[in-house]
Amino acid sequence: MIIKLDFQNMNLVRDLFNLQRVSYLVEAKLINFFEIPPLKESMEELLESSETFFGYFIGEELAGALSYTYDNKELTICRMVVHPNHFRKGIAEALFKYIEKEHPDLTIIKVSTGKDNAPAKGFYLKNGFILVGDLEVVPGLYISNFEKRKDEPS
Image 1 (tube, one colour):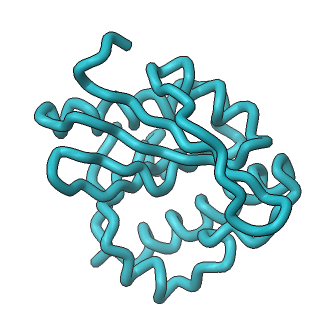
Image 2 (spheres, rainbow, N blue to C red; image 1 turned 180 degrees about the horizontal axis):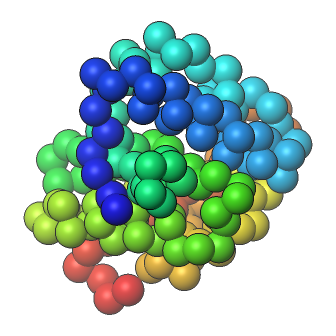
C-alpha cells in the first residue's frame, strides 16, 4: 500500500528517518562517500523538509519511500529509499509509477544519484530516464543527473 506520509505521526517520521539511514548507507558504501545529506540530517531537519513524501508499506512496515518537489509541471525526485531487506521487490518502481499517476500534467521528472551507484542508475534507465550528465559536486564525487520527459515514449 502506498500513502502520503503524515508528518504529524512521529512514529512514522521516526520510521522514515531510520529507513533513509539504512538505505542511504548502502549507497554511501557503493559510491564511497558517507556525507550524503540524508545521512547527516537530523530528525528536526527532516521534519522541516518542504518535500512531499509517500511511503510504501508491507503490512505495518514502511519498506520504501519517495519524496519530491513539484513546480511548474516539473517534478524532482529528492529521495528514493527502500529498506535493504526489500531490495528487488518492485517497491521503488511502484512508488515511481504512483507519483507519475498523481501528477498527470507533469512534463519532466528529474532525479540524480551517485555516479557509482549502478543499481540506481540501472533502475532509472529501465524506467525511461535519460542520463543528461555527470557533475562533480565535491572533489572526487560525481553525481549522475537523469531526466524523463513525458512527451517522449518510455
